[in-house]
Image 1: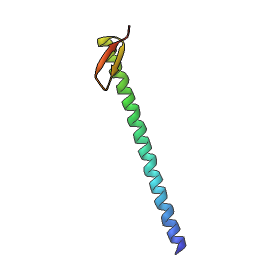
Image 2: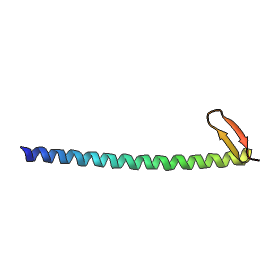
Image 3: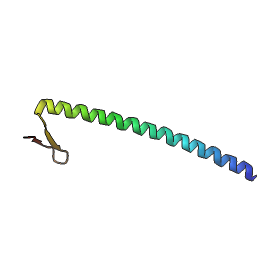
Image 4: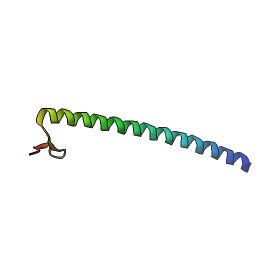
Amino acid sequence: SSMGNLEISRIQLEQKLEFLTDEKLRLETEYTTLVSQEQKLVGELNEKYGAGNLDPATGVFTPTK
């Protein structure tokens, strides 16, 4: 029946929304972790080599004057 099909569609949409919400949370957590790791790495590089810029494409580090 149309009512049954509508209910199945509603349930499927709720399940998809739940999946997307969980995936969004996972990605936000992953992003936060990566930002934290990046900040730690920058701190370690600054401590070891001093302030500067690293070109990720070439791997060349240019100290800040």
